[in-house]
Each structure stands twice: as structure tokens, then as C-alpha cells.
Image 1 (cartoon, one colour):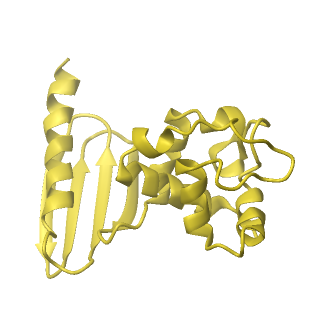
Image 2 (tube, helix red, strand yellow):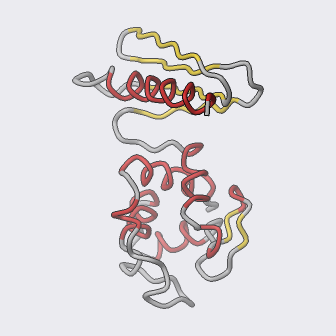
Image 3 (cartoon, rainbow, N blue to C red):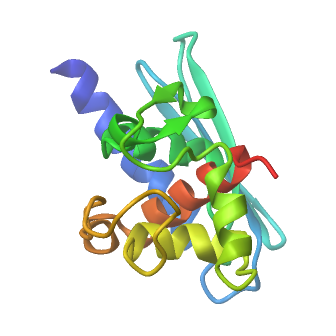
Length: 171
């Protein structure tokens, strides 16, 4: 209980500093460092960039960078992939996933985006998550993938998931 009581305020402070200090400014880089354990939060702002850090005495630390202009964070996309059951249906080496119900995400997104009128890979992956029946990969049929991810994922989660898949997709 004490852990949660200390972690929640620190996480909230890190979120607020990281998401609201660049409002009204051009796109800047925001770096989040999160460490699990008893937390202390510090933030510094220099020019258009804001750095938020949460540190502790624990040994586990994760660091990732995103842009505030709406780009996704591939490192943050991995837990979104895991939490939403994507590994149950898709093979995807960066996630250690071996599902076979849906297309292999190591290779299919790049091939299918080209087959779908040479669509931009990022746009194709995003559309495939939010409107999975818009393009059906060869050998698959409509109605297999849930159509709810466009509503159940926040815009940040969706962008992070897309960045994670695109970062691991092979040509």
C-alpha cells in the first residue's frame, strides 16, 4: 500500500510535467525515464524541450523518447501490445509473440501496405488496428480481428502501438 501511495503521485507528477509543459510551443522532444520502486520526481525545462525523470533506488529503469507532435513511442508500445492480447493472434519477434490466428507482424505489414495501393506503412498499421476489415491480408478473412481497438485505446496508446509494430516490421 505504501508503494502505491508513493508511486501514484510521482507517476502523476511525471505525466503532468511531460505532457503539459510544452503546450503552445512547436514540437519538442519529451524524455520519460521511469524506475519502479520508491519514487522521486524531478523535471527541467530548457528552451522547447522538457525532460521529466522519475528515479528510485530500484534497479529497473526504462527510458524512451517521443515527440510531442503526436508520434508514437515504440518502447511504450510493447506493453500496449501485451496488455491487449495481440500476442494471442500474431507472431511478432520483438514481443516474443507466436500467435498464428492473424498475420505475422514481422513481415506482413510491409508486404500488405505495398499491396494496399502502396500505402504508407505507419498509416497502414494504424488503419489495420482501428479498422481491421479495411484491408484483408491474403489467406485471412473479415471479422477475425476485433474492431474495438480504435475506441478502447487512447490516442497515445494507439500511436505507441503503431510505432512498436512499425519499428519491428521487416521489409
